[in-house]
Structures are given as C-alpha cells and as structure tokens.
Length: 374
Image (cartoon, rainbow, N blue to C red; front, side, top):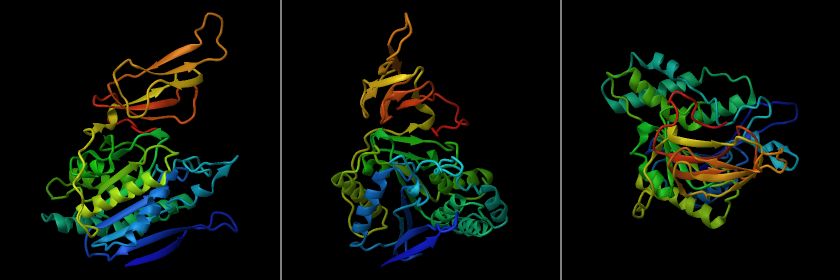
C-alpha cells in the first residue's frame, strides 16, 4: 500500500510557498519502520536518482513493515540558484549548513521519561518515542529551515532504521554512523559496498542522522539502571561523488538498499548473500583532513580509493606566480595510513582549505572536537 502526502512549509516570503512530498509504504505498527530521505544537501544529485529508482522498486514490492520515503528532503535548498549553479548545502538566509543544528531534545525527553522507565527494553523504547513525540509538539521554529528540520525529525524519530542519502565531492562509497551501532550496522556498509565506514558517538554540529540515533545512547548513559538499547540504526550514506549520477550505478544502489531491508524483514523476498565487508570501520577522529598550506592550482597524485601511508605526497599545489627564490611546486603530504575516500572536485587551493580526506585507524583529534567539515 502506498500513499503520498504533501506537507506545506511556512511561507518565508509573500508569494513563495514550498512543500515536502512524503511517500509511505506498508502499514504503521505492522513491522519495523524505515525512514529514507535524499537531498538534505540539495546540490547533491546522486541521492535524488537513487530515491527515484528506490520508489520504482518499492512500487512493485510488498512492504512488511513501514517505509517513509522523502525523495526531496530540502525544497528550500533546491531553489537556491546563483550564477548557473545550484547551491544547496548552506541556507542563504543564515549560512547554516542544512545538515547541521538538527534537533537535540535529549534533556527534555529525559525529563519526561525518567519516572516512566523500567526494566523492559521494548516498553522503554515505546516510552521514549512517545515522550519524543510529545516534546516535538512544543517545538515552534521561527524560520522556514527550522520548520523543515522539525518536520523531517517528526517523520523519522520513531523509525527503527534511518538512511540519509548524501554524496561527497569526488569520492568512493562511504558511510557515517554512531559507534554504538557497530558492528550491528556492518551489514548496511557491506551491502552498500562501502569502502570506508566512519564511526563517532558525537561528530559535532548535530547532523540529521545523529538527531535520530544519538539520543538513545545518551539516554542509556543517563539512566544506566534501565534497559535502553540503541533503537535506531541511523546512517548517512555517501553515494560516491557529486557527479556520479549513472542510472546503472544508482539502480544498483537502490537494489542494495532493498536487499538490506529484506535482510531486516522490512520488505518481502529473500535477501541475496551478504557481500563481504570491504574494510573494517575506522573512527571519525582518525580522518586526516588534508589542508592546503598555500594558494595555487591543485594536481592530485592519488585517486579516491587508494591506500596511502603517512608522509605520502597526495597532491601538489602549483603556484603560477612564485616569488623570487620560491618553489612553484608545494608537495601536500598525508599524516596517517589509510584510504583516501574523498577529494575536492575543483582544483584550486587557498590556505586552510580541505583538499582531501583519508580514513585512518589512529585518532588524530580529540573526540570532543567537532569532527566534521563545514
């Protein structure tokens, strides 16, 4: 069974109204609930294409639980065009990243749930979800983007599985998820063919996936006498690079999501044999964000997916206007052993700009730091 709902966003300016299209499959309460969204960063095209193929696949399948699919999660960003380029990562109104500052309601949920929690994990899950829904009724955002974030979280907060479809610039398939969700979530990374899986309890900035999952382990720490499992497997799936919009690849990604959901008993059918996990998960604290130390033109010497070792030259920065006695070529080296999983799609450097990312096993930063780029 499929239904479609359009949820209006508050009007931000006269004559301009936007809405969110929500597709629902299955029946609430019949089985596990899954929430899937694409395009929270509205200028990341691969997620839209995978959602397109996913909708077509779901239209012909029997959903045993409930699936909520939001194929365009950010109609605000999708309208932000400038100089022939769609700029859907940051809100033009306040420059805030659309995947940051999502609702963190743990304290308010804890205050409501404390006297109600017991020893039964399933009952505690239901209590926490009910308290979350009650707290959400008291949230009244002041702006359009805030209203959008509330709607998205309202659709996802009671889901057992949340998949947020993104992409990086020039990248391989990789996945972000909370450390407490590993190794339970390893089947997702393996099924998607992720070459890198990045784990953190708190990545900083309150991205959407953590809004859905982190409250569970935060509450478990707050109430150790009660049984509170990590009841939401929430992950950000980075569908390679920003230009990877091939029908064949996107259809396979959609099929992989269906296989994962079949294995989790959400969709009818026998799941195929689980592919082998390509690489073990690594900590988000171990990511080497390789930054430029000088301006110029970037020439990459390593490709996404390559394994590099510490002090390898990953790129060179060419200065077309060197001063007298200054070398026109600056070698850019990495600080860790690991997989180069992302690099910039343009070829320009300025001091401090992130040029590439490497997933290493050894921590390079304190876990209390903000672990994500802007």
